[in-house]
Length: 319
Image (cartoon, rainbow, N blue to C red; front, side, top):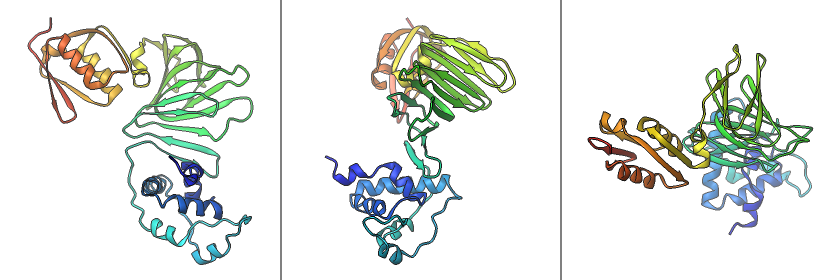
């Protein structure tokens, strides 16, 4: 069960502290919260990422005794360190944390969310849901204001399940392109100089300075900065990393392997070209990857072995 301090201290408050915007009262709450070892570990992870991604926003030097003397119940003066916090700040190690890290920008009122080697599901304050793929950066406001709901997919890939609100359209800024919807589900990929949108349900408007196109469910389109939109083929496996639903219909094993590796982050290695030439017809719904690979091996009469994080499929031919 969470304590009262657990409920008070969020990652946004930690980021506020790191950005130099925390009040003395908030700094004290953070200090109390960090008496729990797991909380202290979380603080150090965010502190490391903050220093790695905000090299120009170093915390200013401060007289810690003066800061504590100035803390009053209704004080509006900002203080950043307690004596105990000085020791924590001195132990910063700049690393990239291989998990979801998010931190508030105390100056812009936005939250930057990053994933490294895992996917993450996020619920926005309008009840829209976003599944962020690995190595993805998403910027969201602390609250949607005005007549639109706007977020920025700076890099990577994300699946959006947007809560319907005809009076307040949802807009995804993705590099040079934009996606505008009222309420629907779609996948967005930002890679190099290309943005690809694949629609699962409903309809979206996909546009840039050079072109615009409406995309309906079951279709996708690609845009580059200097070209017109191009319609491309798509299937539900495009967003399987979000839905955990895999559908194969006489699908070549090379494609099957690529989809499973993307969805689960595990490597599958065929032992020879005979295995690569196999084709699979099957459907899986939110099954563990170990079970999926085992069932594939069984159905194709292949031998399955594991070497660390790698699945190895061996066989001479397929039925």
